[in-house]
Image 1 (cartoon, one colour):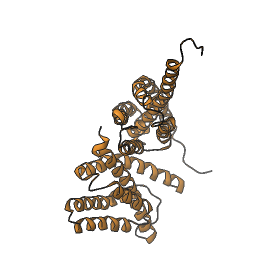
Image 2 (spheres, one colour):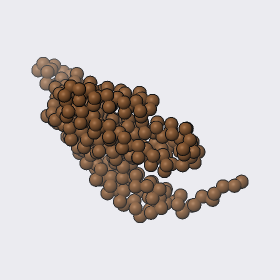
Image 3 (cartoon, each protein chain N blue to C red):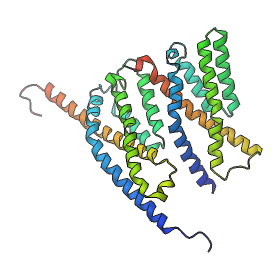
Image 4 (cartoon, each protein chain N blue to C red):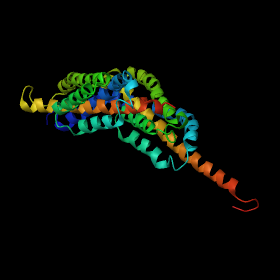
Length: 148
Length: 172
């Protein structure tokens, strides 16, 4: 499979995966609906979106989410800390589909090499970006004000 | 010259699948055209300074440029969610109605995809992604009809309004 064909196939698989995972992101949001607006603000969600868009590695995304959880814990907001914990776990869980999609499309860097590890990390970040897009959109939608 | 001999029966099957798919989507699109009229009418009632043609076209542009249905539904969710005052996409449930209509196309897409299973080998090449792709095609058609009806009904509404305001006896 040449590079262009591989890129197209990865793109197609990402699209299919993203459409399928939208429900999961919505369910996560719905589980914390009561916290939306007042405890988990638009500013926090925008911050998450911006960090995820710009992060060069999954480690930075993980740090950001952990930091948000720690801040909430220090402020005594255990429910909010619980939310960030769930978000972090969901992000971690995207590693497996990232590996799966990567493995299903042949022609990438040889497994186990630094190039492969970096490429997989970038791919993991792409999946997180898709997930966050769904998470943020559903969070805005699920707020009481938008249900008129 | 080396290379694999093309499997002509598979090529033929692919062409048959695509031709029938195009025809079924076109038929479904014609059936959708009228059903968008009522929703377009509700959108057209929103004042122009709150919701203009560009805002509605924005949804259409995304529908035709994305390869994911979720991009489209995420955009609508954001537009509805950001309309805290309920003056634009959240007004009288117009945005949620559009969102539900697009989600509702999923079943139609699945039904069309099911009819394509007779092209067994060509169908398998899509690796069960065909219903999703058809869903996106139907969403595009739906939004296209919606925008066309919106444009028409808004103009019609404005012309009727001007007619109403014209002093008696004045010729247009």
